[in-house]
Amino acid sequence: AALRARQAQTTSRVGRQSSRCFRSTARRRGCARQCTSLPTAGGAQRTTAPCPPPPPSSARMTSRALRRASRQLTPRGAGLRGGGATGDAGAPAPGPQKAHRISLTPEDRERLAPLRALDKRIIEVVRKGHIRMLDADYLRSGKITKMLRRQDMPKEAFLAPEVAAAHIEEGLRKAGGLTYGWQCCVDPDPTGAVIKAVIRFLKSPEGQHITCLFWDFSSLWQNPRSEEQDTEFGLALDVMAYLYASPVGTTVLRFKKMPPVPPEMAKTLAVFKVDAGAEADLRAALERAGVAGAALEYVGAKKVWQVVLASAEVAEAALGELGSLEELGLPAGAFACTWFNAAAYDGRGWCSLESGVSTEAIARARFYPQLKKAMDELPAKMWEIDGEAPVEVVEQDDAQGHGPRVAAVRAQIEAAKFTGKGDRATVLGLFNEFVTHIGNAMIATGEAVRG
Image (cartoon, rainbow, N blue to C red; front, side, top):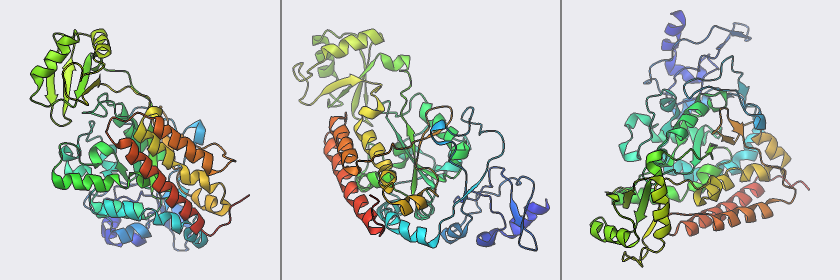
């Protein structure tokens, strides 16, 4: 009770707060029951019992307080051996969690400054609210188990734009960015596998430093969009490469595993580029192809026809018959595909961009020993989260330099599958622009290239 009273009295003095064991979040919600270090009269540190329950969410920290806050973060885990074992999405790893103190010297901070400058565009877009960052503590709380469109998400699920921008600006990789393959055009995670993995990671020791999260479906305006929302969506799309690539601002969470196809979706097809009022034309085209008895429904949010057939076998056979919908009397450009998108992560266009840029700065830093030393003080840049325990993504040694690696990513994007018309050119443009800027940023660090 005495410690609670002391915390209440000192909330306004967060920058000088005696606790050095909390996560720097927009709402100070305690320290995940880690121990608290308090100074003694002689300046030494003594350790108290576990922290009391967190203060109310209304106790917010200012961006200035955030910058003064303790730089203690949780450990990376065991790299390729994986991090601490976790159970389901609701249970963090048992046992004590050791804190990792970031020890950046003034020289380190100066060396990282050109890399931090790459985040200016992201920070501006987040601060203006074009991208909304989810509150990581809201996700950890279990208050939501199904991700919704940004238009439908509760307001309390997001951090205030200026707070989220401040977390990115700190340069401690506190903002998370999720990369994964959409499983369905109207619901990217119909099985719930991705959200379970995200919450499991956020509750793990390796994810405790994350304070906010970018999840495209809930962070960006989705169709149908107003004219203003469409403008904001375009501005957000312009910085996508930088959000994942940020050398010091973001941690990337990668979910590559494709869950089994739900039985109901296995017997469902999607037909695009056919107007909402053209049901009769669509049904006639299906009958010409020998596909009869289908249940049709138009999903206006994605401008797609849902075609439900008797079984998965019937759906598979029907897809083979619907080769050219134009020849069956439907508009030019109309096409059919499975409702559940089981394409592998590595064969998808946007996923290739997100993975390709995420570790580019880390790979280049191998040739800048002092810069690498500074970057190694930060939490790990990228984690695989689709297993029972997170595994750090570590790039293999690249003695040939960045040229072959960049060429390989370009080739992967060229060969990848895109569902949106024009997306291939957009993604290649974003990647090429980032490659130019990261190269200039590395030179601006002032360190001579090793070898």
